[in-house]
Length: 451
Image 1 (tube, helix red, strand yellow):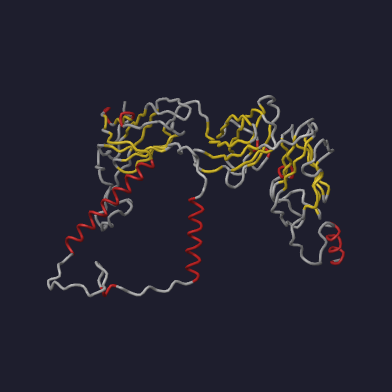
Image 2 (cartoon, one colour):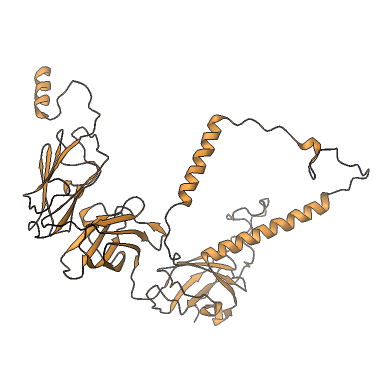
């Protein structure tokens, strides 16, 4: 009976016979029909032939259709699997006098999961000419300041908007549209939250972050797409965080215009009994980080000078340093340097390489829009109190603005536990510990927000 069960299982998987050597080799692409560069040709289909049976569910995509792309894009793609071959053509057939770019993306796999890491591009024409033109570019998620990878880019023909040439961005956000007929185009892309690998995510969607630019193509052009959400309303205060008793951190629900100035007159803070609190200064998050760093450096310098003044003692003997001793260094402080191991050198080289790659990462040509604002107060907040912060004249990237406000309350001060010893300076506050500087116990909060 056991032998019969094994025989049934073996017959149920004829494509993967048991026994024999383990196959770890990826499928090999043997031929593409038609060949790249062919003209005056209207094929029945473009055929990719491999040296073994390929998987209908490839490792590089959710569906077989997502592994291939035809440019210009038609009304969908007809993809057929035939064991060692893949047949594809556009729904509705091939256009007359058109240049087609057919792309197979990396990720085709065989039945054992061995993955072909290389893709393939084939160019042919149903007419007599393949133009030597190209549009190169890079797509950014502008607000994040990062490149948008694996995202569809379209070049729409202004003369016939039903024709859209397409390409995908690579790991650096770069894309290349080649062999387009000279003329006017609108190059556009929208960035999907989870990437553009699936067919649904490839569709252009104005609800996402997107951008477009016009191109008059003669032979070549270079473009940059800075995708952002095109909100027709002005920015609002999304979240407000009390950093300390005199610092508020605001996260806006959309970025500010690049030429947006920030002044303290744009912000109003009202407390109990409609009393206005003084606002000392307003920063962007980057400006505030730089200010904090400068303050920390200045404080460290002052502390170092103070320690030097209290610990430095003159040499009462007035002895000169030995000949050859470096100035400012004690002779007995020189110690031999420990040898560096090969592993440590390799780790340092690897870290330096990774750091250089990070520094060389592409960045948008325009500054990253501001989405975070820090407000410094001239008067400390009072514990267990309600406040209303209002902002005006905050313009978004489309130039629109609207009044924005946020009501918030300061936390209650916990009763101090006299049995606990005080923690070190700068230690995080926990229940029973000393309240943050500037907070003083006060009456219960008002029953309604300030007017």
